[in-house]
Length: 431
Image (tube, helix red, strand yellow):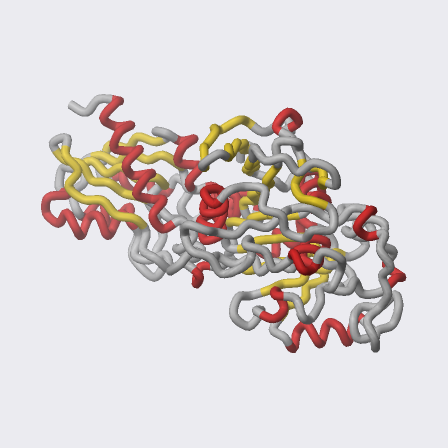
C-alpha cells in the first residue's frame, strides 16, 4: 500500500526530473514522469528537447510491459489532444497503468480536465494536486503564458551591503562574486529573453549572453527598451545581433517609463556618445569571455544626474535631438541592417503579449533601476531574485530601487540560497 509520504517522495522525484530540460522544450512545458511499481521506480523521463516526445510516452516505452499495473507520477496533467503525437492520456491507458498522480492541472483549453476524463473513463485511479505549489513553481513559465498571455517575468537585482547596485560613472561594477554570477548565467540559459533599459545598455555596453562553456548557444533573445533609438551602432549588442537576437522596443507615448531612462539628459541633446566617462571600465570582467569559475555579471544601475552632468554633444555627422544618423527612420534602417529588430509598442504589457505570441515563456529583467520600478509598478513581475553582497560601494553609489524590507505585499517569501559570500532571497507572486 502506497503511503502519502511515498507519493510525495515519488512526485518530488518527478519534479526534479522535469527541471532537466527547463527552457529547452520550445513552447511545450518541461514535464517529468516517474513510473513506480511495488515501491520501486521502473522508469523516468522528461519532455524531450524541442518539446517532443512527451515525458509520459518516453517513460512508458522505457518500462514496456512492466508499466502494466504501475503508478505514474506526472508533474502536469497528461495531454488529451492529437498533435504531432497521440495523447499521453491514451498512452497511459494503452500501457495498462493502474494509477496516475498529477501535481498541476493543465490550463491549455485543449487539455484542461480532458486528460483526467480519459483516464477515469478507462478505470484508472486519478489523484490531482499533489505538491501543486512545487509543481507550479517549476512550470511557472508555461502556466503564466497560458493563463496571462505573457511570459513569466523574473526581476533580478544585485545589491551591495550599503544598498547600492553600482557606482556613478563606472559602467559595470561587480557587486556579487563568481558563485552568484554562475547562478545568473545558468538562469539566463533557462530564459527565452533578457531585458534591460537603454541607460544600462549605454552605460555598461553589456553583451547579455550566456558565458558558460558549452552553453553559449542557449543565450536568450536580448531586448532593450529604447524609445528614441539611442542604442549605439558600435555597441556589443548591435555588433553581435547576427549571432544572438536583439530587439529594440520603442514604447510609444507611455507613462510607464520616464522621458529618458538617463536622468537629467534631455532628448534634445542628441545621441548619447558611447564613449561616456568611465567607458574604459565597461570592458570589465563581467562581460568578458569567462569560464565556469570566473563568470560575468553586469551592474543594474542607471546613470545618475552626477554622471550625466558631463558635457554631451552629438558625434560628428549627427543632428542634435535626433537619433544617430539624423532621423529615426535612418537610425532604424541602420539597426535593422545590422540584424536588430525594432518594435514600436504602446505599453510594457503589449510587449509581453508579443513575446508570448512568439512562444516565449520566461523573461529575465536585469536592469536598471527605472526599468525595475516600471515593471513592479505595472504589476508585471512574478518572481524577484534579490542578490545581497557583503561588499560596500560607498560614496557615489547608485541606490537600489528595491530592498528586502519593501518587497510588495502580494509577493511571498520562497527561500534563501547561499552563493559563496552572497545571499539570494527569492520572492514570488501567485499565478
